[in-house]
Picture 1: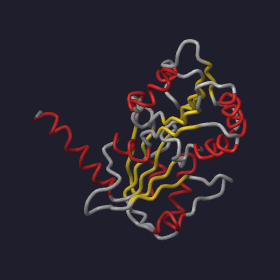
Picture 2 (picture 1 turned 45 degrees about the vertical axis):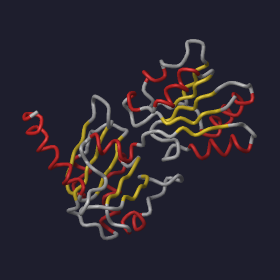
Picture 3 (picture 1 turned 90 degrees about the vertical axis):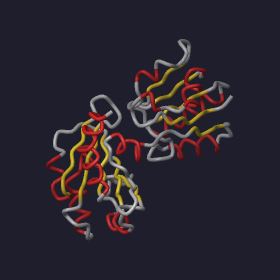
Length: 241
């Protein structure tokens, strides 16, 4: 038997891959993140062992996966988005490899493009942005992001886990030369029925996003203006259909 590190997609349970859903429906044990849709958790067999990761540290999660794998179970580790994009999938894969446990990574639809797309923001757009830089709103040790590195490539910046320190992140990007007037968007609970999004110049995005619930994604770049054009045009397209 094996441990499958499965990406559940960005939130909407319909965005899991066919392969991922097949594995959930046939597993002996399911270890899932708190942000995974309850609808997907409910797809596990009635007799499957189900473990919610909430409140369990990463080291213990690694141990649980190894223990279940050694017990000969078919295990699904169901993670939001894609396991290898800010999902700690690499850490879990290393723990399994070091323990001699067979594992497979089943990619998921990552929030990095899916959440902006759900808000009609293309992260690349010909003539506007042909590079995308990913980052986190804080480093693993809680320190500030590498603002110079984030800004160096130009194009679009997409930041995970930045909502709680949005003002500091915006100030940090401006400090290293990003124009304060650069369009920015915060998309909260992307792809879900209660999705919300706001847009504002980078210098004002923290104020505009006050009160939005997590999880949320920050997008900085001229592509945000493309999204605003698409949102204003869509009612006309819908009416003509």
